Figure 1 (tube, rainbow, N blue to C red):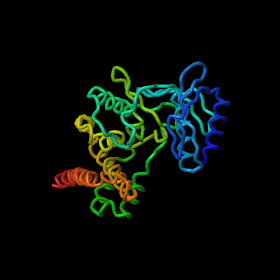
Figure 2: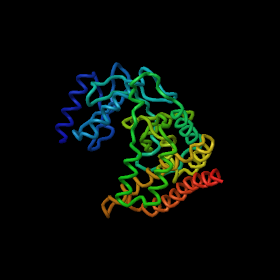
Figure 3: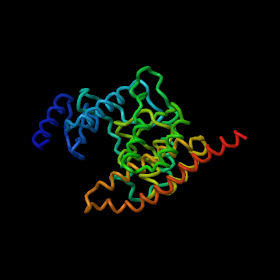
Figure 4: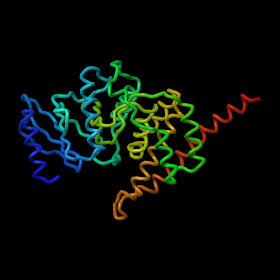
Length: 302
């Protein structure tokens, strides 16, 4: 999409929504993030600028999610929906707090109070389930079996990995929890008094328990070891070790795939050795859980 088309789209949304004093905060090939004012209040506008069917569908889901939050809000801080055209634009409450980081991975230490607030927010989300029938927050966001099969075909999961994953997946059954689904550092805003706001809900929905914790473990835990300590404690306390190990395996392999597909000159490829080492640890965790199940069955047989 050309800059002229972007400007025209922003002008159209501004006119329809009464958005003034606009300033583009960030622009990608997918969307524009625009600061502005409506009804004398500061707001942030998100405008879809791609016609890619995948992102069009995710955008519609996010609009549905924000609308549903106006009826039934999870027990975490989420920007209030101010306006949407139901198609390609959202206007949300301005939060103003800085993100945990701008990149895909956390690159700096975080305040321990902010870390605790973030992990607590993720745990609070996982305990919430909407009561409104047909809520978009009840949609399953990951077909785990298909994803595992796909990564196995592509060689990321060995036959032994595949066996351990499918065995653990069979054990989990239909147990799912609500989750954010995309906890990149940029989607976590911190404010005074260790307040924590979660934004960008395109992937909000149902996951195996521990999906958000596994995401934080991988994307933020390397620079903030306290996150991993708190996550290990939360997983142990909730008894969701097998589910967490499945999520961790899928997320680590996804990150390996993303980084292997980067251009050879991309500086982010420097993360590959670390990701490979973390996957070796994640694989050991996965097989330990699968082996624990096999040992318990063996003892039961005697």
